[in-house]
Image 1 (tube, rainbow, N blue to C red):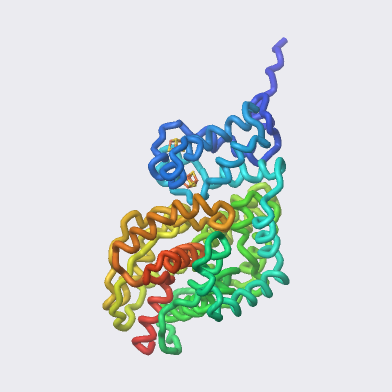
Image 2 (cartoon, rainbow, N blue to C red; image 1 turned 30 degrees about the vertical axis):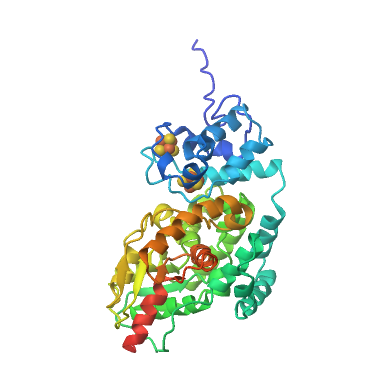
Length: 434
Ligand code: SF4
Ligand code: SF4
């Protein structure tokens, strides 16, 4: 008689004696196990470089994640929460990791698990609540737009603290490049595109959204509408509110499926990063997983679509520009060359190299409002490097980075302005009367 083999504990109990079974963190154990503790990620991590504490490094935070699962630290331990909160989620640790640790996913799983043990800060809860509800978001953005058009944000941008910084962020949104109107002529047939309007992009950078539509049209893309789309859910996922992120993702998946578009253009790197990962976000949802993966595979940063088309050369725009790479474009989406290809299509534009352009600016969604001290510390070297270029324009393709850098420039009294690369290409096409 053959003795019965003991049941394989792996499928249901990946870590024997796991202190947090059934949580998103327990689900993320394979990613935690992938870390070989080599430390290659330390020098890429802005919080480690600024705070000089191993617990504020990727390797240290992964060690804390494992300790939470082993039960040697508790989810309600304030110091554990602080080290996890202080992570920017910039994902600069991912491209340098030889083991392919999916750090961004581990962070979201950890925050979702810790969320059960303590209340989310009031300001974060308020922002996440508003962004998930169209009927609140629209009036909030309308009010912000009205306020941004007055001198009030500029007048209050110098006051200390978060209010002053928030006012400077608003003031920075009204400083785009002047351009004449033109009617885009579509050259060629490169496919049908629907655009994610976005929350902040639609509310405060509407000029950039219109420019995005025009430059895509000039480069042969047929623009379609995708009604019913909502916030992408990135802010919620990064804060650990995965339920709301998934709910918003489902709305977007359905909207973009209905649009019939081949590509989904996104001009905010943080939104594009999560949308490309909708398949992972909904991996445990049998009804939506495949649909999410299919829609995610159609998402492109606007610079990718433009670079694939050339892009068409514009008219002369004799200005000096430096480029800052958004973390969620460079590290999360691994899109590095496309924005530079867009800028290279502008005759007369002089691109000035920016030292440490791949380093985070400290925006990180709502991080700059929740963790202001660390955010300021991360922003300071960025501003010094921008000042050193002497360039009057800083191009960057993410709403958060545009406002974070724009606000920092205003408060540091540096005359440079932040601008989306698409706005520069649009101004170049306007110069051509395209
Ligand atoms: S580089 Fe990757 S494997 Fe090495 S310590 Fe960092 S996360 Fe772990
Ligand atoms: S996401 Fe950014 S801040 Fe967080 S551990 Fe990785 S490199 Fe450091």
